[in-house]
Every structure is written in structure tokens, then in C-alpha cells.
Amino acid sequence: MPSDLPLDATYWNARYTLGQTGWDTGAITPPLRDYFQQLTLPVTARILIPGAGRGYEAEYLHGAGYENVWVADIAPEALRDLHQRVPGFPAEHLLEQDFFALPTTPPYDLIVEQTFFCALEPRLRPAYARQCAALLRPGGTLMGLLFNTEFDKPGPPFGGSGAEYESYFAPYFDFVHFEPAYNSIKPRQGKELFICLKKKVIFP
Ligand SMILES: C[S@@+](CC[C@H](N)C(=O)[O-])C[C@H]1O[C@@H](n2cnc3c(N)ncnc32)[C@H](O)[C@@H]1O
Figure 1 (cartoon, protein in one colour):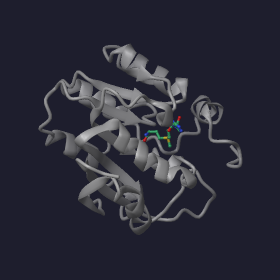
Figure 2 (cartoon, protein in one colour):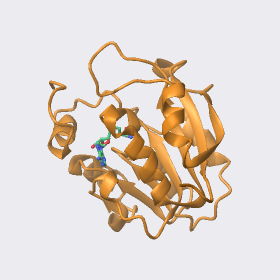
Figure 3 (cartoon, helix red, strand yellow):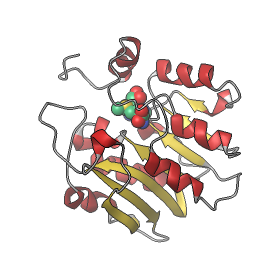
Figure 4 (cartoon, helix red, strand yellow):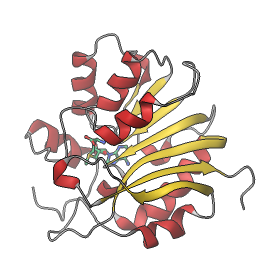
């Protein structure tokens, strides 16, 4: 599809119905799986996966016993796929909503990022960092993967660098991990940052 279209629900839903989902790995990726295997949060923790697409991370966490996993995506076709694939996943936790309009209460303990940030127009990046902070409780975590590379075609995906991203997150988060991922899937090796950021207790 031409990339000069507005990146709205119509655009993203069409990508699913047309099968143009090159980002979709068909399964949870190792960096997220390994992090989840070490997760020490209680099973009642509120976990949000924005721009989750078909939601393999939600499927994994649900299967691991987490009861309060929420998925937000503007493409109904992606949510329908998760609903059909994982019928036990609570339907009321499938939010067909714009990430930037999600209610900030009650707060989340954890937000999971994978190929959502890079799908947004770059001008929205400061707002993404701000909204993640608004959605988390103080001390809550934003973790996941960000592309640390430029792409040779017009986005999405839109590339960037750690140095650029740092400036968006620094006002709101303490940085626990912000380094090249060592266990990316093959096509993404050397191109991803693994991030684990803790929301500051006090920020401007
Ligand atoms: C590149 S896909 C990534 C999907 C999924 N994270 C994955 O790795 O397979 C980007 C996703 O973000 C969703 N999306 C784009 N803008 C959004 C917004 N403002 N709010 C919520 N979801 C959005 C799209 O519908 C799409 O499912």
C-alpha cells in the first residue's frame, strides 16, 4: 500500500485484510519471551500491549497465568484474529481504541512495546513517551524493543536511533536497560534496542 496514506484505522485494518503484515512474526519473539519468563509481577498486575496487532505477547502472558492483560489496537481485524486464536482471552480486554486516547486510570504496571513505536509517524514520538508515562503507575515499567536503524524505504516502519529516542523518554523514565538486543530474531539482529524503563516517581 502507498505509504502516503494517513496511518489511521482504515490503513492498518486494510494491511491485515490484504495480508500485508510483514512485521508479524507469527509468534512471541525471544527478547520478550525471555523477559516474561523472568517477570516477578503478581498475576493480577495490569499489563498493556498497545498496537499489539495479533497479540502474541498477550497470548503468551495469558497462557502464563496473567489475568489482567490488556490489548489496544485500532485495527479490528487484528483483535479478531487474537480473539479467534485464543478464545479464553477475555474479550473485554481487547480494546479497539487509539493508544493516545486510552484512559490513564486505573494505571498499568507494565507496558510492552514491539513494532508499535516504529509504526507511528515520528512526530508522535514525544507524545508516545508522554502517554506511556501517563498510563503507568509511578515505578511502572515500559519494556520492549525499538528499532535502532534507518530503513531504506519510506515508513512505516520509521527508523531512528537510541540517541534520538533517549530524549523522548528521559523526562519521565529512569533507564534500566537501553542497549542493543542480543537475542533478536534473525532479520532484526543488530537493529534493535532492548529497553526497560521505570517511570519516575516524580516528573515535571
Ligand atoms: C506494525 S504493526 C505491529 C503489530 C504488533 N505489535 C506486532 O509486532 O505484530 C502496528 C500496529 O499498531 C496499530 N496501531 C497503529 N496506530 C495505532 C494507534 N494510534 N493506537 C492503537 N494501535 C495503533 C496498528 O493497527 C498495527 O496493528
